[in-house]
Image 1 (cartoon, rainbow, N blue to C red):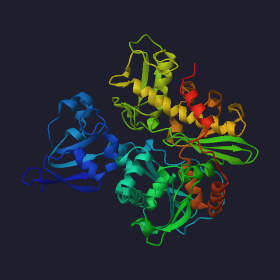
Image 2: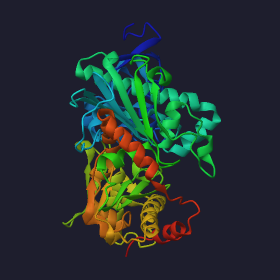
Image 3: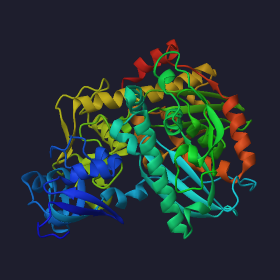
Length: 518
């Protein structure tokens, strides 16, 4: 085929992969079929050219630039070949570079490993994988414990919804097999990438550990999620067992390769928290410390001198960019920091944009900063009321009244969960020595602003320690040390779960924490 139009079917190249492309087909629809997780995350407006988030670098025979593209793209971006996927149509062969591929460094691939005794659960090479609700990250090791490669990607299940509830609903509606196939295919891609980086064949990977929250592991393993969707919210399985690669359709690996799925703690306190707990070592006697993952599920574990209490709060996906009018993940074009301007400029705010490009939206860390700044300038009051809505941060990014309410719901759920665990243990925030925040969100979080808006108790802002992707670090420990693997199972069984759904303490705390601190 060529670019002359002699054929009505063309080829689109994305990296080293080729896809068929019809004449007149939008690049957006191509991405939905080729890389659905990226496309669905990048087109929250439904592909109508109203958000400007589906930027791709495109070359080849393409339709003319539209008015929407001139609105959202700078002259420099257009000159560099940037287009909006939903507004660009094929007129011949094309080549695409996805911005998300350039943004992979923003996905925190692993945290710091504590000391451990090397006793790997593989012979030559092993892989650790963390299936997050939003992202998937993987690391490759050799039998000496040397890290050889890393890889990460967006979770392709995002096309069924940003949160686990939406995905469970899709599974109940008959799409469980599709959900499983999507995440298995992504893991296969990551394993292939790891092997290529290390210069080995994928068949050399002879062991793996795959962690994730309870729902993610259910969907991966093809286990029924229906009991998780209604009271009393019981998991069909808590895992802590080994499967064969063939059972998970991980075709790049030899069929008999052992794949260990760590033990979950409860229905909504998953193996990711078991893994993070192991990596942060937030379980020792003689300490009072709190581990939390401020994500869609708001999972947290309180350690009181070796006694472990855990809960999960339905924080929602606001801090991951979903449900916010101009929200997005932590990628190029996202405002990730907001400050009060110190000069006499027209705008009271200054912003930092990931990638040093024109802003197109705001991610979780920027959202927290923005709300803190709005409180400081009295643009919103302690109830969250915004007199002059929307609040413009920098054109075209603004926050609406509904955005503020979404933040209130999310921060209230997290803070109320913390307070409920503390009250259950008879403690106050001052008793906590260290607050560990897991995940990439913790790495970019301004803890003072988190305290200012009431996401965490103000008393804890000076005691925060970010531990990166502790879930992946914990999975790595279980991969490299069978002793640590056994320890993780004992920890998961030891944790006492505080059920919040009918807890009057949580209900009262949730209502109290809806207000912003004065």
